[in-house]
Amino acid sequence: MEIGILGTGMVGQTIGSKLVQLGHIVKMGSRTANNEKAIDWVKSNGPNASCGTFEDAASFGEILFNCTAGNASINALKLANENNFNGKILLDIANTLDFSKGMPPMLSVCNDDSLGEQIQRTFPQLKVIKTLNTMNCKLMVDPSLVNGDHDIFVSGNDLAAKEKVKSILADWFGWKSIIDLGDISAARGMEMLLPIWIRLMGIFKTPNFNFKIAR
Image 1 (spheres, helix red, strand yellow):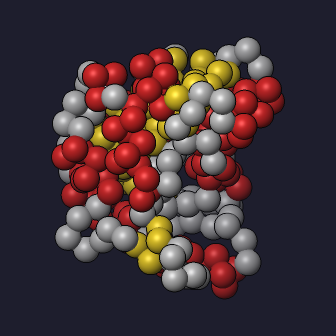
Image 2 (cartoon, one colour):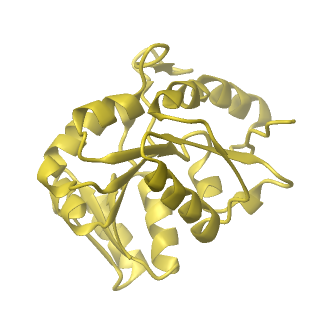
């Protein structure tokens, strides 16, 4: 499958590399076509990896991953050109972490709104599915890094798109326990898990942990 990754940071690179390993063709997008991190990622991942602008990646991908910094996501998607969306699924992994006052960061969007909802409102052509945002990027693509059963969440308005994303999480990344929280408004709670996740990372001194819903 041809997949577009928006964002060149650790999350985008980790997911992009996993997808290439699985045999998919991946284009990583950024603000400029000659982004150094994207070029280095391409060199490390072989002929099925390429890079370009946000617009290039959005045009290329049958499915898109938003791996940009959350506070820049809307602008990045505007640069991607909504004409390239055409009913495509967007896995929104971003969080609106604000480090302007230092650590721990605050959320710039929370309580009565979420980034997932903002993206869906701004770009109704996309089928936005919020997922993977509640954990470290290495765990996103390899749940075995944490022992035992643990959970991943999904939310979104389009039921068929959610089912497709659930199959991606299970078949590509190996997730066994996927909890569907409902429509995209559930992204509020998913994103608001980040402050406690950051606190836990400080206590555990490792990002290799996850949430398990006991029931």
